[in-house]
Image (cartoon, rainbow, N blue to C red; front, side, top):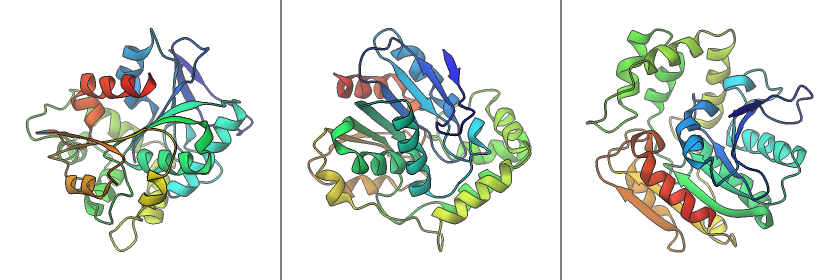
Length: 260
């Protein structure tokens, strides 16, 4: 697995994996996360698929990206990065905030998108657990993070042992809390989120899959009902918001089917 950082600020930092020579799979993480959340997915894809996991502006190694903000701002940075990498065709996979970003990227360049896979995506309805997200962005100790992180997962899921420590360390980096506060203020207005133009999204010429867990406590699982009928819907019982970490084999199957 290789990491790429572009000093010219033309391209977001990203992690690459797998053989080139085919439309790559672009992976976009959620709010408060970073590219490493896709490590397991990338490792399982590496034999057959080229993948790139980006750090979105204000996250990970893109903490000092020149402009940070809502999904529209992040989508512009992703589009700029895809252009800088000269990628003419790709599959998009986005989780939560990254799902909203992936949707906006796809609507800007529909001819380049081979498929769109959205995991608990933002923008499918106005409701969102704004209080949880703000507390998650501000907590700086493992003791503060652990009970918050539990709410991102299904009730029977056991958190990875070092996860709360890792997230707390990320929050303590200079500028990290301020960046997440800026981003959350930009996409959480009156404790609601902006809504994507779903009918327009459904008009894209690529296959679209929407995946949700019934125990999602960040974005209500009934928002999947807002997805137009042309989108494939995958509902998983007993799963929370972090689908790619809770049920990676199911998510890998969906991604592989889209990439075919």
